[in-house]
Image (tube, rainbow, N blue to C red):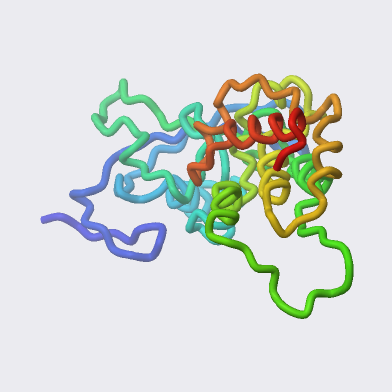
Length: 258
């Protein structure tokens, strides 16, 4: 008779539906060593659970020192972006059944989890996000208007809103920036996420700061560093056409039409 076990999310799962999965996690603790290392954890877990659930189970039941970020756990905050099997993903949106070798046996491939590339690792799966957020702040991600305080709302047509609707979806998870080879080689590059958030306001009909943002992105570390590789678009968990947005900013710089 199958036994019933508690899942990481507090629900109950029939043990007959559990799979044995090995998670290979890149560990780093600057307080104990300057070198990173790999550590395997083998769990019996429901394949329909998420990678975040597996990380919770490891931290709560196997090794309390495992360190990672997460907040909402529903794909909104973007804090649990990490490399899973070589691709940037949100741990809370990645189902184990979609990325694990469930055939079992000694030759089963582990699920490989590591921090985002191109950013300084602070501990285990946590990277230093300050340079990323500084680039975001540098493009002035807020509405800029002049004149007196308006007495009514700024009206905008559906067509005007649609012009920048895609780039409003950004949750600042850094998955796109962490997938960019240009950013890997030179952390001074603004990165895709900052440019996406500049795009969101450059093409907003209510905004009057487009020229300022374009001049910021015309810098040697700005939009012209993009090599149109499409890694950023592939990595975006929200499906934003990141490369297209970057090209539209380049076009606006050339034509000064936005």
